[in-house]
Length: 172
Image 1 (cartoon, rainbow, N blue to C red):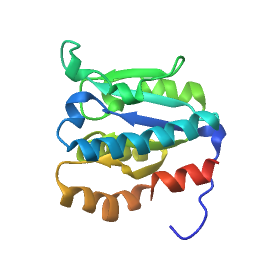
Image 2 (image 1 turned 120 degrees about the horizontal axis):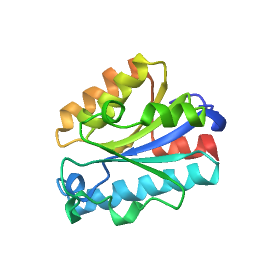
Image 3 (image 1 turned 45 degrees about the vertical axis):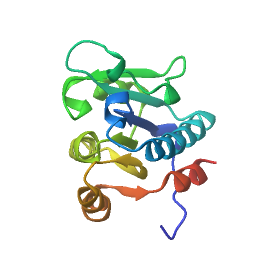
């Protein structure tokens, strides 16, 4: 990204999706630690800037230790946690209502997997006129080629793709 991104804190929300034990377990411990560290940096910057953080988890049955949001990014008091049963959060949660209630126009997205929750959210969000900012290094997919194609070719057509550091700088 060559120019400074401007983020309107008053109408932006961070969506952190499927950062759960099961989803993270498909990656090396080193990669998990790196991903969680970057996610925490983004969450801290958003919280410090007054940007709402919405946690989205996927569950298709009982709550188990594997379906828990990873302890390293536990939601803070007052942050919403929405539970979905499909890849995308719009179809099986009240996300749309929450975003309207908060006056949100821009979604900052982090998620596992990029080809699941992130793709679905970018596409659905775009269809209903949300701006999307995808944090490339806070999204993960088990297929490196799919990750590359989505970040380099598809997502830039629907929104903005930046790194976690660029986001932190933009809201700092």
